[in-house]
Length: 142
Ligand SMILES: [Zn+2]
Image (tube, rainbow, N blue to C red):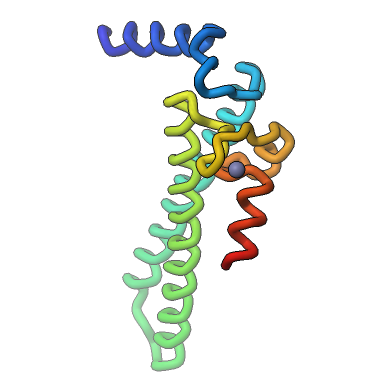
C-alpha cells in the first residue's frame, strides 16, 4: 500500500512543469501514455509468442522420431525457433529499457545529446534511444 502511494506521488510530481526544466521533454503526457500503451502491447505479444515457441520446442523434443531425416528436420526447426527467440529477446530488452526510461522521465530524450526525439519518430519505433542526428552519425561510423 505504501509503495503504491509513493508511486502515485512520484508520477504526479513528474506531471508538474518544474520537473521538466532540467530535462526538456517535448512529449506531452498524453503522447507518452499512448506510446507506453504500444510498448506494453509489444511486451505482451512478445511474451505470448515466447511461450508458444517454448511449447513448440518442448513438444517437438518429446515427439518420437521415426528416422534420421525426421530428426534432422526437427533439429533445424528447433534451431530456427531459438534464433527467433533470440531476436525477440533483443526486442524485449529494448522495450523494457524504453519502459524504464519512461519510469525515470527520460523517455523521448536522446541518450547521446539530450535532444528531444520527435513523437513521430517514437511512434515508428517506440524503442528509439537516439535522435536522427546521433543515429545517422552512429550508422556512418559503423
Ligand atoms: Zn542525439
